Length: 508
Image 1 (cartoon, rainbow, N blue to C red):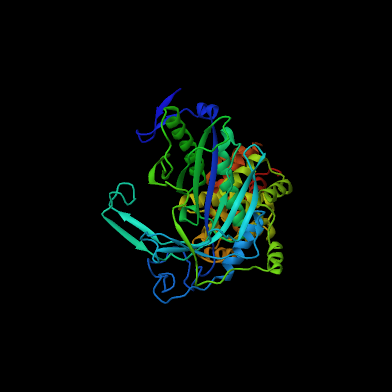
Image 2 (cartoon, rainbow, N blue to C red):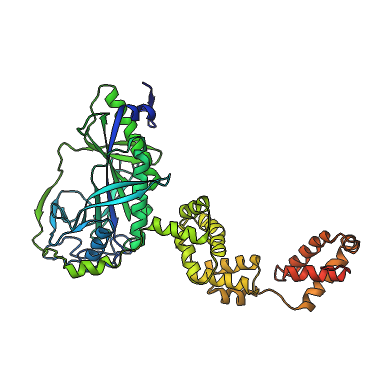
């Protein structure tokens, strides 16, 4: 058995090959999704991300005495649609409970949630894996609840409360609608357990984005994953003791956290130790650390919420919402890939860049798939990386990109000029046509102006001109380049070449 020091220098880790040879991993994934409703779950406060702290609050979400909650209908409909997309049963009757606990980020000292009566139960999601196969993940439940506030700890080395000198509270997030999606125990993954975990959260994120119920920004906390991991010796049926790694906030980190916990727990068990049932914190440099002990299955006390009526979705409502469920995103991508005629590698790059939907939308506005892919998959990805933002947050729309493509195709713009137009749109200078007009970027088609530039370039480069006259027409490229520079790229390069050759007595 090979034991290695962990990333922190404290935990011992078993080689991964030895882990999967000796132990069978069992996973459980809990994903919290902030809904993109205009208002909070039980009040009319805004849910806009990034507002000044404690500016989007009211007596209801602050839990002040006498303030009564009112259920957000749009949030309920989003919950039903999520449940349907996950092949869940939508229950005919459910209700909310008070999840009682004390923590500074929960102003009421309880969270309104669903406990033993969730709105959606017993579903599944067929998750695509890297090799093209699928793995069915069972869904235990999807239930509604409200988010808590946010604590910011100052003065600690880790950003957590331990060692902090000051803690700041922002209640803007308190009351934002949440859907918690809980899997059934995920068994039979073997060595692919970390991959399955990442693939599931990836598929779930893509599905939720397609449903348009959340922006699923993991970097902003709109989608958060708690990863439960346990190990049992190969051949044993009884589950091992689990740990719960809280609030993992990237797809890659989900995979890393699961793999790390498998290696750490295996080292503990192999050394004759006991895995403690506890929460764990994930650190972005690739390890987990202990949180709080979880000695029992339930950490909280639940009581029926007396201030809210039960939720009883009608068959008619469920039927109407079922008709809104889109095609599974990965199936849609496969169909689109065939329509575009691109390789798996090209499609993978577009998916990784978050460009597929943007390309598809640009095509719907009239651009060719080749042109749309070239813009979103290359130039605009570069611009997003330079700005440190997601591709879909750039200040340019698929319709605007399609317009730029059209201007290139009708000869108004060269490719070089088109890039300047796009940069103008990104800078907030208006629609593409306005940027063209304001910057004077249209291709010059006046032969007299181009001819003048050609004559000047030939006169300035007599040796090159003589080569062209002698039949070395490839030398014309130097003159074309000089003309394009002189005209700031606005001349039609093909027409410039024609005029250069004609001036030197050569046929095109």
